[in-house]
Image 1: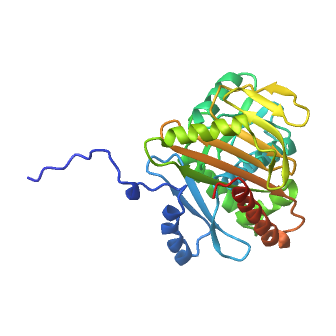
Image 2 (image 1 turned 90 degrees about the vertical axis):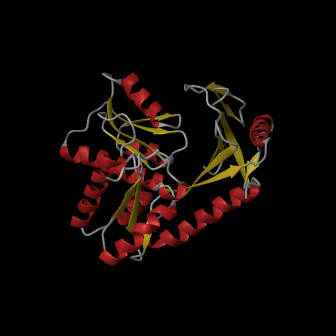
Image 3 (image 1 turned 90 degrees about the horizontal axis):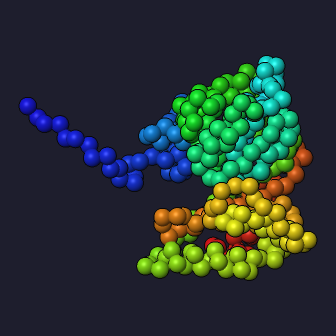
Length: 319
């Protein structure tokens, strides 16, 4: 009788699908095209992150990023609760400091409170615990393809997220629309937010020291302008201070300390720098915004936002 080999629990990188990676989702895109599907969904093996593919305004398959997925899911739940008459005055949603600012606009538009916490679902769960009995949690999520629907499972959960995203796609299809159509409608209502992320690795034995020096330089000499727009606010989560560059007013940040810096510019751009605590890597998050007057201007404004992000990266000498 053959002996079964006991798995060692180690996964080669290529064998561990992550919906954050386009290569992972592209495997399913071909099948979605063959089936002429309405939606493509993919999770990682432990089913905590979910990626989504939908058809755009030209009928082409596109992959949504984590911010877009969060915007669609948050909005759907807030609108559905209002429609069913079950929304409450103390409803709240929770996201993280590096997730799109569009979530705050959705919250204001729907009359709910939005809390921002440090990156990681343990902080979302902690905020739920702190507000328990006082405020009603609806949904939480972050840009890294994670959603927490309700408070029964206090971690990112792709199983409930997949069910919700399918329900959302079916709901829009009944109205003769797609999730892409809905996203564009939201951009018209709240502004066209676009985000991007780059990760920089510093090789060699002094990699982490190079990244520490980079962060220290940003703290000692924060940029005065980024891509021609004045920096109006610097948030240093390690020092726990937010500085208004123009007035020099300093206010405390009511969050645990974390090695993160954020720069907000006059034109509404947000740039965040966040080093890894264990690897010689640093992530830069970019968020830019423009008005979108109508759906037929989507491609033009989308291209403008892409150019703006690339110009910021070039100006900060990150690419």
